Image (cartoon, rainbow, N blue to C red; front, side):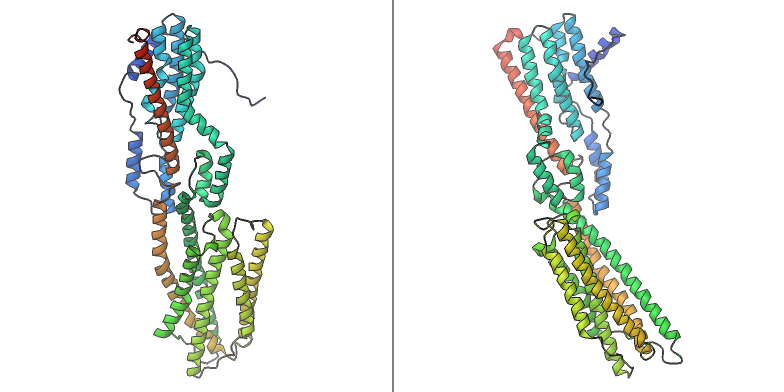
Length: 500
């Protein structure tokens, strides 16, 4: 086995016995102190307090990164000292100094008692478990070599009890029950929690993943909002180009007019064409069970893309349709030649197919009984086909306008010019209506993430801190039982327990 762990027993070569004895005396004096405190957790708590509560996903990730940068210079020496103490105890036992040897053979228990509350991260608990596990393998053997089988049995039971919390947690991580929890996290947890949870392996209720999962949807919606602003700006540039084209090719005719909507038209365009679709999108995504928000973004990206694209198309179609009707009505009042309205069967077929495809995507639950690749491909192609039909309708409409451009040049230039300020108003209204709400929701969800949120007590994440606190509690219970059993043995056999 080329990558098998080598099996050998570590040995120490003592080159300066006086310095070794002096170092072990310092270790013994240190273990006799009442408390061991590193202030690492307090310092990290103050660093996080300076950052303040996260108001966005980026600030949440930055806070997690700050906690991940913590240094633990005491963890490595803890493990080395525990191992060295056992070796020194074996050396004293070989010299016939059994009482002094017992002090160093049992030193790991005092170290764990002092450092249990200081090891507030998972790596600290793992090192602590490794110390106890090493003691379970070496300390009983040392007592056997000293001819004390009863103390060897007691030492093995105590070391096994202290190593049990971490050992049982490792076994639980590999259990079949934990695999079901992993599957649950992959479906309902955020992408960040699905990456971090396999290293934690702790049972968590699905409700604790809600805030982190919704936070990713909010971030995706903010990205879609930025895209919609860019799209409307592109539409404004196209309208500006069309206006200049008809202005330069007017051949002495009237310039394209700027028809601003009146109060009633503005209320209909901005209210019915912008605010009403936004309200419908909010109600659908937050209260309709088929919106896909009970699954994470990695599984519900198709639904989210469909919903956002449909919202963008609905706003664009409603606003352009209302502006077209307003411009037609105003142009007729000004005796400006108006081209015939497009045939209704085209846009009815296109919009009906698009709406049917949208419902088909939204009514499917991903992942679930319909999460096969064939089903997703079918729905995707259905939506793509409806979108292509809508694009064809626009192309036909543009081709018709191009064919009639010489007869109705003034109308087309006026419509394009009138769309520019309305698109600007739509951008402003969407920003005013959505950005404060999305920022508030992002801050609220970032501060209420019960899985990957920042531990306010100076730890890493909340899910890791819950696991660490459970391991600390189990270790503390084992230490209390060891102390209680030691007192009982001392009371039953006072002669066998001389003062150290």
